[in-house]
Length: 318
Image (cartoon, rainbow, N blue to C red; front, side, top):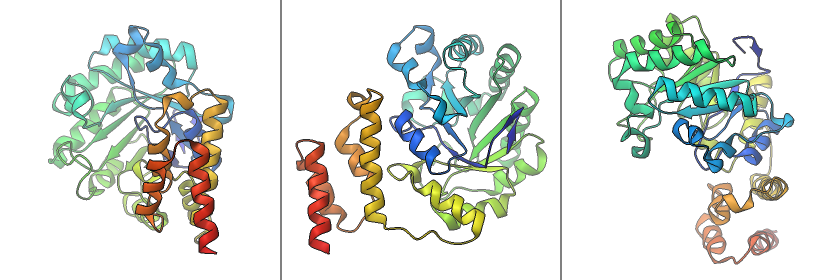
C-alpha cells in the first residue's frame, strides 16, 4: 500500500489505542506482520504545553518504522503547532488526525468524534496541517447515520489534502456496540482517489479477508482484537498470503508474548507506565479457564508469580 510517497510493505495496520499502543506493544505487532503502527493518541494542547508524559507517547525506534503518530484537538492553529513539534522530535512517517474517538473525555471538549458535527472545521484542520507540515497527513473518522453526510465528510478530508482516510464503520453513538457497517467504507472507496482503510470488527482471518473482499479497500486497521494478542497479525498476514490458517498453540503463544512484552517494557524503561495485572489479563483473554486465570493474576504479588501460575496450569494440563 502507498500513502503519499510512503511505500508500506503490506496493508494490515495497528490502530492507535490509548493505554495500549505503547512502543513495546507496537514492536511486537510489527514483528508479527503489522505493516504500519500508530502511537496512542496525543493531545495537541498537551504538546503545546510541553507535557512530557504526553509527548513521550511518540517514543519510537528504528525497528518499528514506519510509524504513525495520532493527534487530537479542535483548533487548526494549535494542532498545526503540535504537529510541527512532533515532526521535529520524532520524524514520524505519518501524522494522523483523530476524528473518530467517541470517548466523553474527548467529545466533551469538541474533539474526536464530536468534530463530525463540524465538517468545515474538519476540513480546515486537515488543510492547515497538510499545508504547513512536511509529513503526510491522514485522518480517522467514524460514520454518521446518513451515508450522504458521511461521504461529504470523506470528500472534504480528501480535498483538504489528506493522504489517506481510515473509516470505522460505527457511529459515535454506537461506541463499540453493535456491528460495524462496512457499506460506508465500500462507498467511500468507490468515490475517493486516496487510500481508504477499513476499521471495525476485524477480529480474525475470516473477517479480515471478508472485509477486504467486500469493500475492496486499500487496507485494514485492527484495534481491540489485537489487545494482548499481537500474534493476530501473524495469523492474518499468513492467511492473506497463503489462504491457509496458521497452526499454533494459543496458550503457549500468549504466555511467550506476554513475557516478551514485559521484557520490552523493562528494556525501554516503561514498566512503570502500565498496569501490569491489567496487561496480563489482556494477554489471556479468550483462553480456557479464563476465570481461574484472571483470579490468579489478581492475586499475584509480582510478575514472576503470574508466570509461575501459568507454569502450574500448563503442568496440570499435561
